[in-house]
Image (cartoon, rainbow, N blue to C red; front, side, top):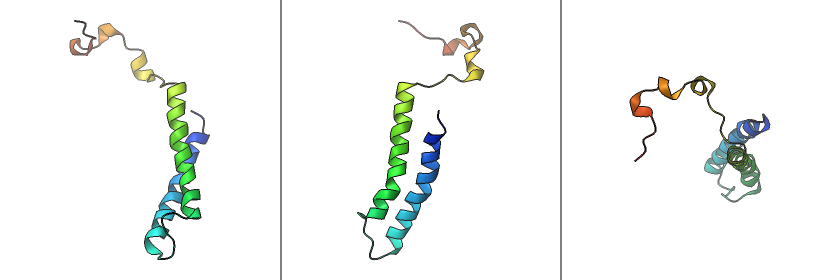
Length: 82
């Protein structure tokens, strides 16, 4: 995963928390303001890009479980066909 995708979440979440706290404690700033919209954009971009990345590129298998064979797993874990 590119480093820009987690960076969007790490930058956007404090901005969003700040916007929510300012909205709670200020009487003049409403829920629909320019600052709240700007603060929400990085989190929305992070969620969209993470979902698209996982759908397009897919999940990578865990390196620990990738080396396991079907013979080494417990009988209850095998695929059952009817």
